[in-house]
Image (cartoon, rainbow, N blue to C red; front, side):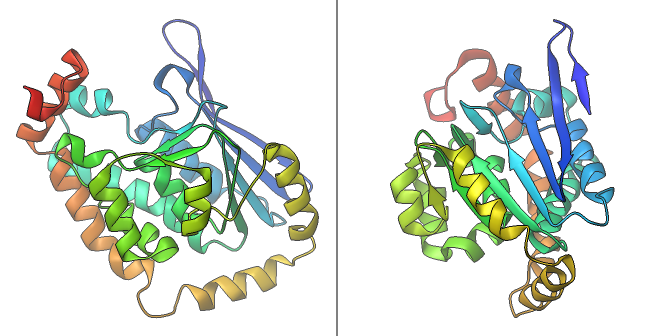
Length: 261
């Protein structure tokens, strides 16, 4: 679904199906591809209505921003109640869980910045490809938050200590470091061609075999479903905390971090 904002610019989720591959592109240039409830609903709808022959789902962003996490201005302006914050966190986690466990191969193709929730999209996908300018960061602690919903997926992909380091340092990791850590699987100066080569192979896999493998893989101890309740609850607690929202609102207005106020 593509929306038009007050300036007449298109924003939303672009969707295209080609030979068993579902392409989903985040296209919100006015917010650096930040997430909001509408975009997450569009993602859920897209994943819930995949063609039965879909074998691969490809998540893409824009050349300068893959996804920059939740739209903090929207969060502050809406003054979400705890119930509303739980609803958004549930929606966010469910989209990532579906990409991680669904009966298809999920691929994130990252060009530009993946921050906060953008790293969640990276961590939940089966395969991650990147271009040379891709960066990966968790900025939440700068705003008195923490990546509650991201960590179950990120811990599984790169391990607890590396996820801990990313969370505490908040600084971007560039492509080579991300590859060394296992956050991305392959990178190239031509990510489109890299994706093409992967799809040539992945199209050969049967949906049934992928479904059976992922069902087994995601039923192993330490499953994502076991982490969901705590992750969603903690995320909602943070994003409905008036004091935290006040500090975030000041950052949006002044550009000053909490320790500078």
